[in-house]
Image (cartoon, rainbow, N blue to C red; front, side, top):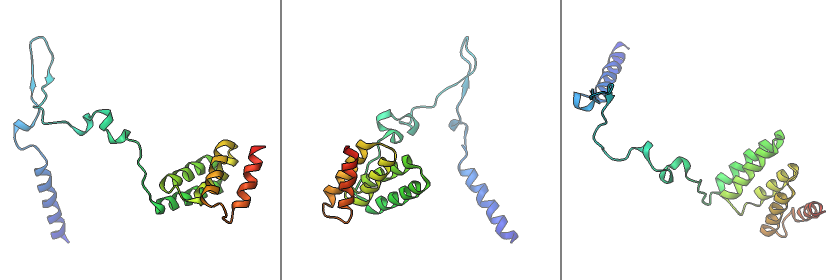
Length: 155
């Protein structure tokens, strides 16, 4: 057991030694100029740093890109159902909307989105979701129910 710890210690020391500057040229230098306090002199420019990217190239600000992913869509519906059962209809609607972005043909996601938006009293969004359900499955098992809900939301 002590050999294992010794090996671990030696490996850590070697790793630390590799990641520290070996000579003074790697360290920033401090020079005092006339009339100024000590300032750190920048190193020679070695190219763009990842933190200095222009905003249009910063991946943190890039819009999320969706591609057809029915498995992710199904996962989002599952999470949305969880929120719906808890009574958090705003979170549920967000997850159902996310599911429709991963798979635009997911009729269940559109149906659940309509139900969540209806509970949030957002009639316009609920109507759009129900219309999409009818577009995807005009003769589906929920078609009559969806038509009744659309009529209810118009009035």
